[in-house]
Amino acid sequence: MFYNNLFRLVGVSVLPVLASACSSESVNDSSPTQTQPSVEIAVPDVSEKTSLERIQDGELALIEFDSCDRNQDLESYEPENDALGVFICGETYSIQYNEVGSVWVGVGPDENLGANSDTEDLVSKRNEWQGPGPLEGAGNVYLWGVRLKVGEDGSLKNTSGEYVGMLGFQ
Image 1 (cartoon, rainbow, N blue to C red):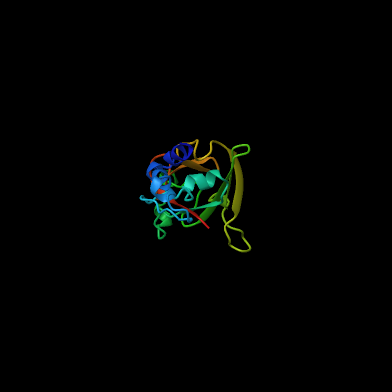
Image 2 (image 1 turned 90 degrees about the vertical axis):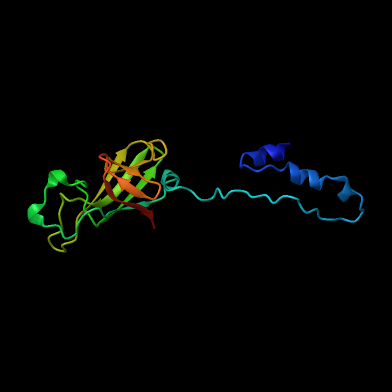
């Protein structure tokens, strides 16, 4: 009964297998035999974790903001209509969640910091923000305190529901 309850948790009944293993037909022969179960047991693969579970466990995730027209005319740029805010389209950011203290750590370029005058590389910023974990926060991740909703396919939407990018892992 213990095994039936154990396998019931994963959606498999083992009573037919145990019944065939304990049948009187297999006991009559004094030589050791191996009883073949009459039913195949299909145990679901529970090793695959969702993106949110991986983040909850502290795995480093990458965000790429790709929802812009890379050839946008800077003359017509309107910051108030920018769905990304301080995040830069086409750039990759990293986030990592630490359950101890419920801290999100985000790293990446900040639009307001511009580029290094010597190298012309974008200046990156590291920020820690305390907030709910991805499994506690209804499927959200946070970068610098900004909430992003994660879709089943890894897509990211801002608080207005606009698509802004993709979530991935190294």
